[in-house]
Image 1 (cartoon, each protein chain N blue to C red):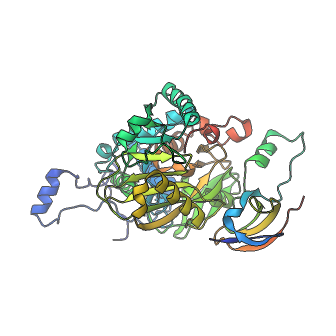
Image 2 (tube, helix red, strand yellow):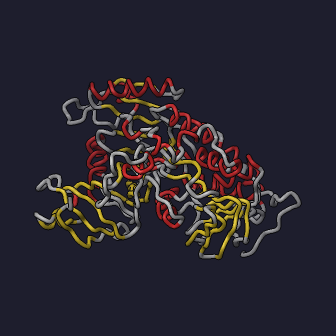
Image 3 (cartoon, chains in turn cyan, yellow):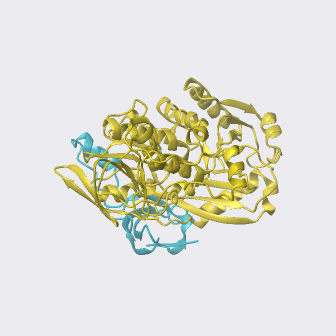
Amino acid sequence: MQQFPCPWCGLRAENEFRYVGDAGVPRPARAASDAEWAHYLYFRTNSKGAARELWIHSTGCGRWFELDRDTATHDVAATRPMVP
Amino acid sequence: MAGKMPNNARGERQAKTPYSAWTLLRQGLSAQAGWSKAWEDRDPAPHYDVVVIGGGGHGLATAYYLARAHGISRVAVLEKGWIGGGNTGRNTTIIRSNYFYPASAALYDFSVSLYEGLARELNYNIMFSQRGMLEVAHDEADLEVMARAANAMRINGVDIDLLSRDEVLDMVPLLDARPEIRWPVAGALIQRRAGVARHDAVAWGYARAADALGVDIIQNCEVTGFDITSRRLAAVETTRGRITADRFGMAVAGHSSVLASMAGFRLPLQSYALQAMVSEPLKPCLHQVVSSSVNGAYVSQSDKGELVMGGNLDRCPSYAQRGSFPVTQSVIASLVEMFPSFASLKLMRQWAGIVDASPDNSPIIGPSPVAGLFLNCGWGTGGFKAIPAGGTLLAHLLATGKHHPLSEPFDLARFTTGRLVDEAHAGVAH
């Protein structure tokens, strides 16, 4: 089983965590067009390789954080508290 | 043998040796010397009417229907590895159409109907065995949700029945019948026309039939770039040179976003590993496909005797073709809970394929944001069952430039208009 680093709890088993989605996707202004909302809600870079992701340490401390992870190798490069 | 094989005057190739009991007997008497090759490994020509990217089931079926239904045979299928070596050769081969929304039921039921006649149409035994698929309910609430789903599916014209607890236990005697277990059997939803087929045979059958109609199947040919001039796709750069075409289709399953990003657009997709595993072979013990969405696992027995098992997607996006341990563990734990006698079996193999999951668990079929490039993607965990339909619909788009009525609801535009085909939240298993 892979271990993921929680910024608060350190290395813990992967099944304590839940993947949320892409990190750093800004919410559009309320007046944004349908296309802008569609891109915010649904369209993803889904990159093969380096990705910046949002996770929750769901059965641990319950906090949200960011993980820099390679989707092709599953290697984790960095972890940090969620940037609001 | 490299190089182009000659075509006859009508552009069709020499007929293949038909597969029948008679030719089998005759070849047996003549040292098996007279079989024609199922398909040739071709070199790319510089130009085609249509280039299909992806030599899995959907890509090969697209090429076949382009030639068969639309008379377009200057077609190439570009495959980065070997045909059927991606998800077509990695799935658990289940074919069914038990879907909640009319648009999905129409699409998948059309596919099941095509599968029913496919072995004859392709002259290739795809071993489609309509043994029925059960989705097990574990309590009264489960049964109520299933009754609702069954009603919707019946209105959609799909053959669905609700089974009582006793009917399920008669049909699948190995299920744990004790009422005191955590998830006892309460009943089931059954689609009797559902079943399994030989996945490789589907790819090989379409390849052989497409090749006979003049399609070039080009393996070890990876698309590395798109040449887009004035917002229209003019050519693809590949590891075997530049290829131009009037129209392009892509059916590349888990790598749709990678190709889309090369072409300068994004898709509403996220790639995940979906794993499968098989036990050691057994004598026949399980006739139907049995699934439990509460337990997150399903199982069928292959003709070789192995139990073929699978479950949900892995827990985070991945392009690594391997499954993560927590999902393997939960699939096996669930199945052993449902079928206690399976606990003594050995696991033989475990693997994964990369699937592209869409937000509403429905595929994306239609034009892409780049003119001349058409999409067949987003099948998520269930692309195999849709191969004949996906091929028919992408071929229709490539030949006519317009949607077939069945693919209209699955256009990329639905994510902007909000008209999702939301099977993800329909309360039925996928």
